[in-house]
Image (cartoon, rainbow, N blue to C red; front, side, top):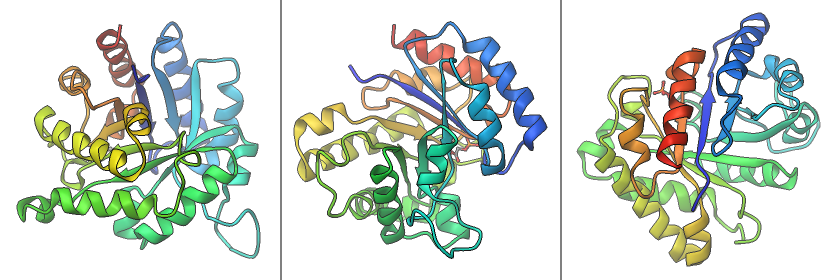
Length: 255
Ligand code: PGA
């Protein structure tokens, strides 16, 4: 059975003080859960402090992006190597907001994934279609292209640890969640694609998270779907009690 993950993507919310409060609150409410990988993904400036606060806890640290070189004259960028030095374990790559506002493409996603893996971190590779693409019946084609582009020329052993997150753009931050059936259909397609590209053992073991307006009211039905292995959570991860409910519900579905 695949171990589920609940990852809170804080986006550009929470300064250092607010981050410290939120992490303390989350620690207090999820400390006894041990069958879910719990991850917080704060903004860069919070990572060092939050990383220290998570030592000896059951919560792991992630970052929201990174550049593909380890160091150099790249003003404003942060490398995977640097993220590792502040105790990051995960890095989300290719989030739809990066694709939409910052020119991220499947090619740059692929380069970033390489750098994350070369530095011994785990990429959470985000894919998903826009509303226009869904309404034009292009969902499967778009997601297929994104997954194969992201993993292009990367070997099975190399991407063993990588995680995929399916996040339909029309469901992110809109309150409009994909139905469990809509999400499951795409997750199953991604798993089938991974089998084609690699092997059935890689495909069966690969964790595929769902993201897009996951909240306490819909998490149980989503997590019960066979190919959904956890969630990448935006809005509902910014409050300790709602994030804790998502983690607890997932824990119950999997126990
Ligand atoms: P949301 O964001 O839960 O606020 O829809 C999800 C995400 O962008 O990862």
